[in-house]
Length: 202
Image (cartoon, rainbow, N blue to C red):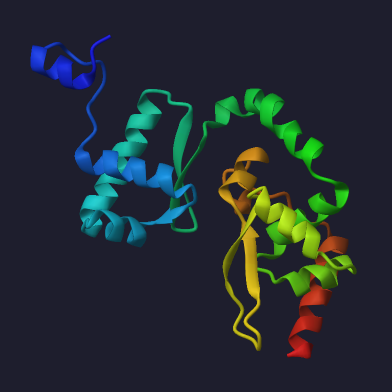
């Protein structure tokens, strides 16, 4: 099959629209960053104006929706990323949803859930919620790219703040963190109590 460049030269009609250079660059940025990217960051990376960046995102979203790609372009909390199309979730879950359970222990899953619901969160805060030291598990979750350092807390020592990664969203079939199931009242009280203890310690 001829490539697009050859098809253009020969005058052969190409199925579907050809994306603009700006939309193609945006697509590449979102793929290579492997995490949600804000509009401001896209503007800096592509040297785009706000209007150009917004149009590129709109063009990309329309293209993916119109031609039924395996990924959708979604916005969450002002940042953009590709996620598996919602109509594929059930089939993807059979391949990826169970992988997490096989690879992570109960303690690791508990720690991952704490990071997901409390992020950004320090290791000490994780320890306080779990009631045990979590050094090894936090390191494991970082190595497997379920969590990542998202900043430093503005307290003495400036400990790392952890948050979940795009891989976490993908393997748990979540479009964004806001799609997490709601915590029970008991779990919420547990998290809030530790948060109050941390504030008092400061």
